[in-house]
Length: 348
Image (cartoon, rainbow, N blue to C red; front, top):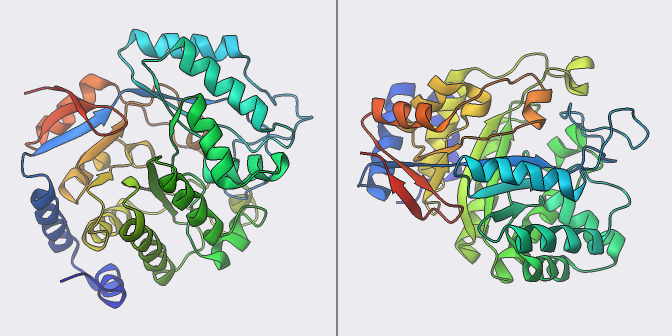
């Protein structure tokens, strides 16, 4: 029997945390009876920090005239990828600010350059917000942008920019960003051109429990329709150095209890998502490990480089050896995967 909105809301508000963990773990075991927990070795590459969107929850972006604004050269990007290859990496998570002047030809050249020079690296890149703006300034449809980038070597797109798929929340924290409908439309367009994506959620700003469930309902409905999401990834808002903190709207980050509670209910509600990722980057390695007992089956990325969450105060780091140890410590079998969740190596 599928979990409904009212039931999910009741679990968030009233559910016993330990019981939620047991229920989520049972559901995870049904989907992953082999007890394998995966991770990926990759690197975030933020090709520019220049952005006109001015999200109040972001401490990373800069204006074009700021002293520390940048666009990475192709040579600088190549160096970062070569460093990733040296440690056995397989993917780059490629995102930037929404640069006001870069059009489709720049992105085509960039993706083609990386894909040609490093064909062994999967390019998982460009959030829906970036795709939306590229389409707008290049006078193309979402599908045309996605098709053209796919031809050049873009493999999949991340779920960034979803935050909470409630336009009330978006109007407060990111009024210049695309609407919840547009985010869903871009991911649907990606699925329709044969590109898989991930779904994300950033909670802990100004949303209600009802809006969290609304978010889950929207991505579950699209997954029912297309089956195009590979995974769900949820993380807590990091308020430090952001406009939301400076204005006194959000002063503290959410508790670990809240994270585990929402994670467990998401595993129960998102019954058509096989993979749910732990967010150790925002929660720290030990809550990230505990998340494996609350429904997560993937420990995410070793994240050789991370700049956006770091700018907002989260400084957590983890290497492959530590990931393997943490997974084994909860009785699971660690395995390195690729972007498509294919197992590359198992560590028994």
